[in-house]
Image 1 (cartoon, rainbow, N blue to C red):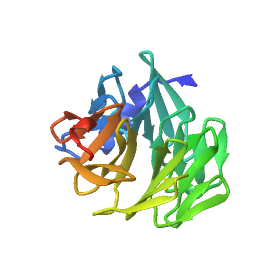
Image 2 (image 1 turned 180 degrees about the vertical axis):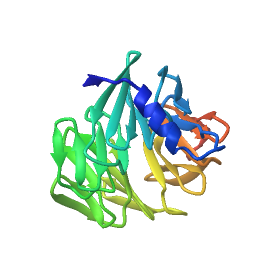
Image 3 (image 1 turned 45 degrees about the vertical axis):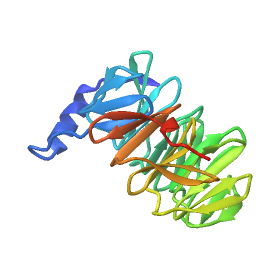
Image 4 (image 1 turned 135 degrees about the vertical axis):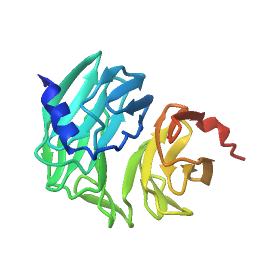
Length: 233
């Protein structure tokens, strides 16, 4: 990774930003970023709000057109991307979706993914037609999000499918965003819900969220709630 000089990117983003539009806070797993100022588990300054923001236990990842920034131990580093990101997943191998396939630090993968994450078993990905692991189709379905699940993956769209259990449950609304949490899969539909094989239960009203362990970070309002507020039988 190369050390980033953020000043040219700040100037570019400022020139492209709509006049008079205040930056909106973005949640990430462990905190918030507002106009590039990162607070919470990580502290630092980004060159404006990114397209996508995610974090694992060690680093914060911010995806911009043609650029992936990594904030780790107070240092901001950069990796070039060969295109405009369509999604970002942090993890042992950060994964960025591009129009031509999936980017990882080890090299590109030629999968037309709408969402994906790397696991020890390989890349899980969805394309609106099914759940895949590498080149193998695991389940057909109109899935648009995929997140880690114990021993496998959870794919979500108009329903949730849990692999390897092979169990599907209906959802009240199409899923717009999903992340793994300590209590199950946290999803954004008409609000934030907790989804498990037992069903889906509302957690809080919100327009965006990020999950880290038991905590769920919500916007607007930069609120934090516990997933343990949802009571299961």
